[in-house]
Length: 189
Image 1 (cartoon, rainbow, N blue to C red):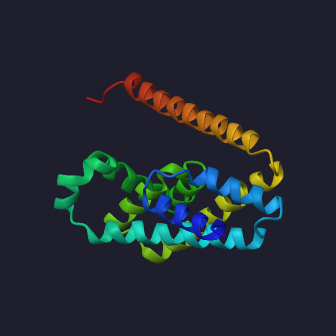
Image 2: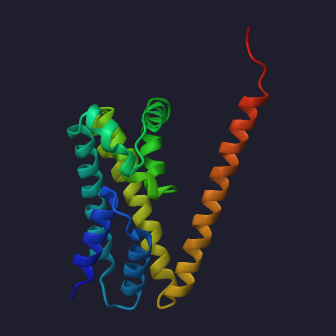
Image 3: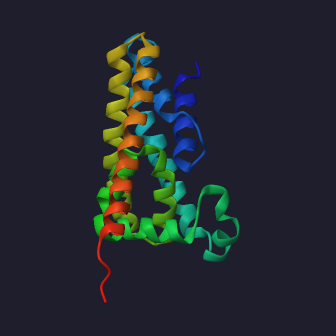
């Protein structure tokens, strides 16, 4: 009875930035689709539309808030001037790939990237198109995983935990390598 609305609300609020288990909810929806409780097409449509709507809301919030407001209250969502500059540099350098990757490989950062894209006035039409591509990829992967494991939710949850750990470890390794490479570089005179 509450499957589609619960999925929609979880993904909408998660995309806006609330700490909700959006991956687990989507895998569960895929599993329920495999069991015949939900229709796969409807679950996919709800997942894409709800998370995409959350991306738009987070972008809109970024456009609506002032720099002064963020400087005073942004610490509650992890906002710092340094992070803002970093995300804006990523958006300038990599553009849409930053938006796509934040929806797929690092989906927990999607709300922050959406917010900073709004704050930095990243092109709305470009943001929408790349966010849609990222959400289609992410939804296909997570629903597909749930559908593939069927009733074995525990296996899917364990896989997601291991995958998240791997991605975090690789991220730390890349950052540490970049930091070390920067520290080893001779200073210009």
